Image 1: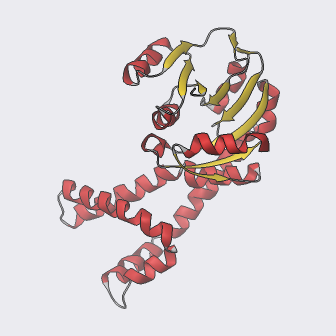
Image 2: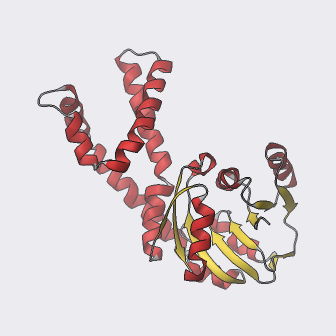
Length: 256
């Protein structure tokens, strides 16, 4: 018999995770807006949807919490009973805060990314050791997983892997723009970038970034010239600062 997972929240992240888990679990979704829930049901017929009422019994449920961090206080007032487990996707929200707000036997913090809908998420996880194997199994169905020892590490990982798709999207768009600027048709530039990213992933899984760079860069060549331009324009520092800023925001969210 399939295990039932209860999603609270039906935004983009919840939808991405749900799509990755279809067929492996029974899925029910609770949300505030019945119209958006019904649209989700039309799109993903295999799920069950329920509108969040003033009081909702969560006794014994295995909950994947996918709401905005600033919605937690209002949400907690609507939940009754002791859940079996909470898997929180709330950026920056500490385990201690979850324990204060929602009754459950066990708690996990996790940070998937939107590639979950393609079963290619890079998901970081921390929390109760009792749920470690269960969490790795659930989120292993939507991609790669990494168990981290501390909440500080998952806040940093949120900046790298959680926000990372947006940062890579900027890089991808910029590469395509560069091709168009040099004279390529937009469709051709986009095709090249898509192929570039598809081929880069397996390389990165087996080779250090510095070694990839050195294997492409020849003395006085086109790559060396372009690389020097990237360093001159602060691309490396810009990415480092993006991670720092995103991490600090995760910490800030945790204090609210």
